[in-house]
Image (cartoon, rainbow over all chains, first blue to last red; front, side, top):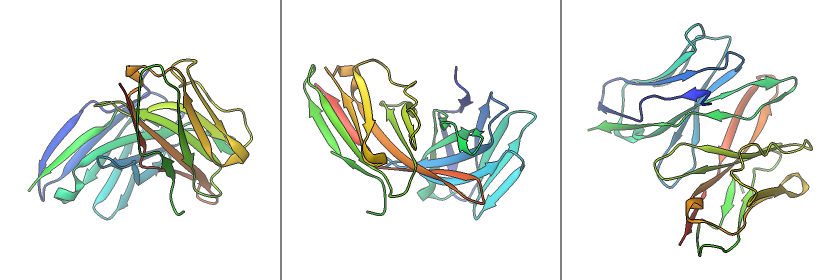
Length: 115
Length: 117
């Protein structure tokens, strides 16, 4: 039962254009959604997050949009740069009282930004 | 150190041997996770330690896999009688809950690449 889905295993975008990475989830109880970025031979690094009570969060070139009714979120990168080429993981977490449940990761989308 | 440290970075072993993978989390982090990433696959959850609570072992693929976390800090993932399908990158992450923000972030190590011949 895959609770967090990233249906596009790969994406290619021209440098300077917008990259849009999509993520769908099934559990309406998730409280936070996070995006991680992973370069080869390195561990994933946190990129940006959004609370379930928000519909948008922006940090520089990165914006995450959340559509709770559709159980869908997306990461926008504008403008895309060659250094953005990496695997992007969508993740979700549910808070349980004062603690939290385990983080659920999607399978990842490999982004290639073409110079 | 400043980040999550994993050792060894690479491990080559023969089928049937036992291996131990180590994770040193960031000091003060209450939660520690183990994941594995097989070639071309996403992050597969293995086990989760949170403070003094019983670990969530729901992701361990078989009873050949076990993990412990001593003193709430260092963790060791042990794979007994390794099989070729155990070959993967094993990633460790630690985390804390930012008070006042309720924001949860995981910090990952660089991983241990395990190759079972």
